[in-house]
Amino acid sequence: MEVYKVFYDTQQGCFSYVPKPLQIADKDYKTSDYEDETDLFSTGDQNGVENFVYCLNKTCLKYVRICKDCGKGFVLTEERKKWFVERGYHLPCRCMRCMDRRKLKLKG
Image 1 (cartoon, rainbow, N blue to C red):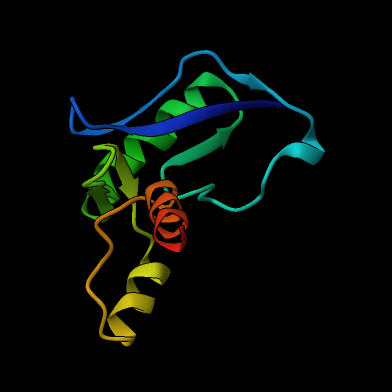
Image 2: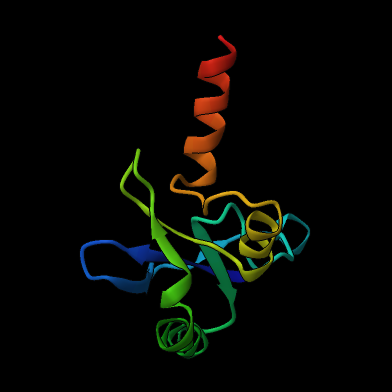
């Protein structure tokens, strides 16, 4: 199965994708839309991934936030945004990787 890695390009200010597909087995592919809120993945051919990226840029740029630690863009899903708002928390300013690193550092 061909899977393309899609990411938010902080220099360009839009979504882009790695032009070379990843070759992975069907069983290794995660079915969730968002792997770790930083990278997205699209299956299919190159035209399909270009359409996917076009749709993301047209509709999802409002969900992109820039991590204050690593500077990478990450996608804040509607569900996650709702979770923070319901609890009265501020929206996250760090991607999941940096949040996990920070938690480990604080635990010592």
